[in-house]
Image (tube, rainbow, N blue to C red; front, side, top):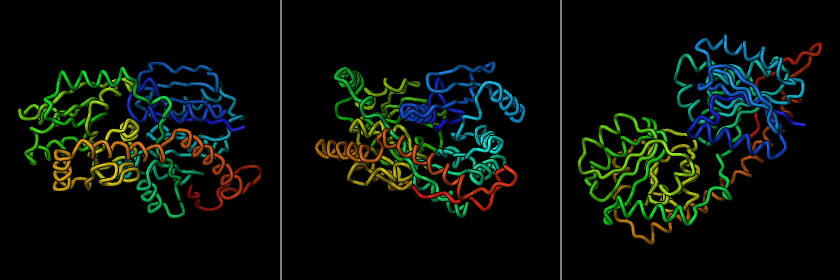
Length: 400
């Protein structure tokens, strides 16, 4: 029976897209009868803790400033608290600490390593001289590497010849993620209380940091001289430069909210005429699939998951990342678009996300990767010398 040691820096009660994705993947696999022993490098934990769960266990450890010390102590703890002989795979879910710990743990346990690359690991790790060796070593030692976008897979394949990552898009539970009549009523009340009827709403959600391009987008809105046609609705962590720009632009009508719990976002999505994703580079944002699943039209850059999921003028208004002229043109189109065309874009967005991003398909994809990783580990990558697995040749991962 498959059983996973799943090592992560992002897991509830952490907030944000990485934590949500990790939780969704773990829940999907446990529902598929895969026991999972989760190790969470938890910034909130003052002391290590361990408890059994219905389908595995949860170990939380504080990420000590001395990473080597924290990981060595973790290995000691796992030998005392887990039946390591029952573990079949070691999974690293992005982040520096998992990428440091998981390759060694997998080797010591003589189990296949599966590395799940998210946007952050490549965005930051490739060009950070301290983190790049960690990233490269994890990829080299993995029996399977997974990414969430085709662009990420192409980058890894180009840098690591012989490695063909599996691409598994982020998923969403469509039965759970639905708008209720109360959500629609809340959205209508918010628009009635905050909105000039002549303005459309641009919604920006999540951690609006530099890579997300929100400041760039507002600058394009101002240069297009169309700020009087829109209301900005921002929910999440807003970087100082963006808040300062909006505060210094009296013509920009706006509402800035702090971080909002995931399901409380639904009325805010519904209140938005467009959900804006102007990232300079990105993975497969949960905001993308959450908004599309609610029939919200997207105005987005053609990076990461947006490039994989969206088609210009079919289910979104698109522009190249960092292209000021293209972004202004998309804003102009958003200002002029008819209600019928807005509805058409939203309906097409729903169709696209349902084809590509069903959480059940995501789980099936990871189950297949686990099967293939075991096959690669057993048959392709290792010889046995006196009972010890020895690498035979560079890793070769199969395209999913």
